[in-house]
Image 1 (cartoon, one colour):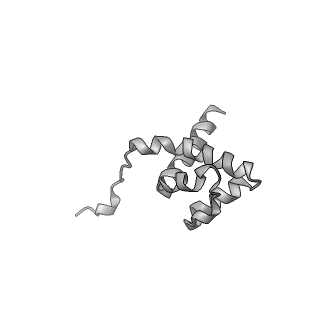
Image 2: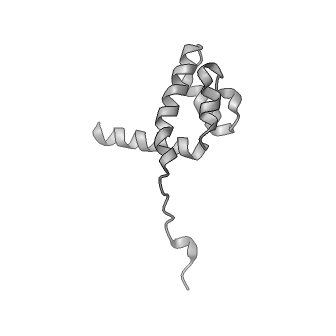
Length: 87
């Protein structure tokens, strides 16, 4: 009898996930404007789920909280890997 864990689970893109890159750019810009290290702050948020890592400047905190962290991570991985293919 085959083990059900032997099957690959397919992750389907939702329309909201396409907005993740846009959200990350806006949050990055808001953090930079306030003098924070955007990469460090975004990583802190992604690892902890604590929204206080993200400034409320320009609505960045509310914006990033509209998406699940897994959606943001998926966009980061996709963007990185697509960038590697081109480079």
